[in-house]
Every structure is written in C-alpha cells, then in structure tokens.
Length: 72
Image 1: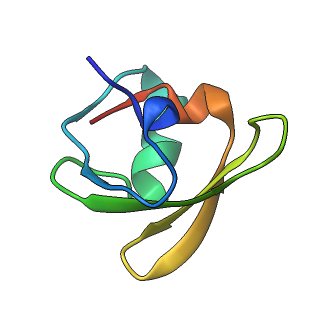
Image 2 (image 1 turned 45 degrees about the vertical axis):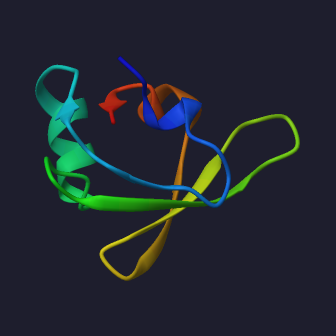
C-alpha cells in the first residue's frame, strides 16, 4: 500500500488508514489526518524531510517517519 511519504508534489490524495500504535497514532489523528481526509502535497525539503501538506485548510509539516504511517 502507498503511503503519504510516496505521494508526488502537487498531488491530492485521500487517507485510507493509519498505521501505528497508541500515542503516535493519536497525535497524527489530532493533526487532522483521519480516514477519508483529503491531503495535498505542497513541498518536500531537499533531503526529503519534512514534507509539507495541506490538510483541512491549513499547512502541516510532517516528518518522513510520521508520513509513512499514513496509507493513501
């Protein structure tokens, strides 16, 4: 399954599922990344970390490790 880390710049994807346990999964959900949410990939830093996305009308920066937990 593809993850948010694999999405291309400028693409809009839909969150299918969150992988992870406990506090980490809860933190990602608290940032607005829940099942069915549309996410637009805005920028990726030169070394690939962090990734800037637009979710629910605001800009969010995610570490690669967190982006790998979001399946699209």
